[in-house]
Length: 209
Image (cartoon, rainbow, N blue to C red):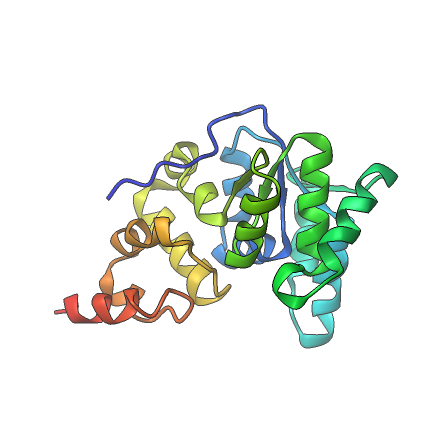
């Protein structure tokens, strides 16, 4: 089943939340994926700090980000005063209507700069749709589904990258992408991915053998 990436503007800046950075690192192909994309790729300082906190739990995502920055594949950017008000509105309030600092900073920066926010969590996508209907959003899967990425990795390499993001990075997959992901990696591997929706994994398991 075809999954058309919504990343169809090569001039757009892509601003990634921490979960997207973690998913890319988990693929084992982060640098070639970012090299294949025509877009500039950035993370906000708040996201870099969030990854840095992971060192205490033995995670290496901060190291991976530093390597990508050193290679010129990722820019670390900072919120300006004009975006702080939007950031504050996104982190204050009821739990159902607020986001963590990394997600909020990613969205606030994208709003300020007319960029595309890369966010995977359903709540973040819902809040963006409700509050900022003109904001362009995309997910990690949209990055993987970009035609230049498959051209760079090949179909098998792309399938391995997506499986690694699911299995090791626990990548969240939006409903519109589930069928594409399962068809790409195959039902046997899909059944092993706890981050896929429960409705997808039993269906995948039933097709094994």
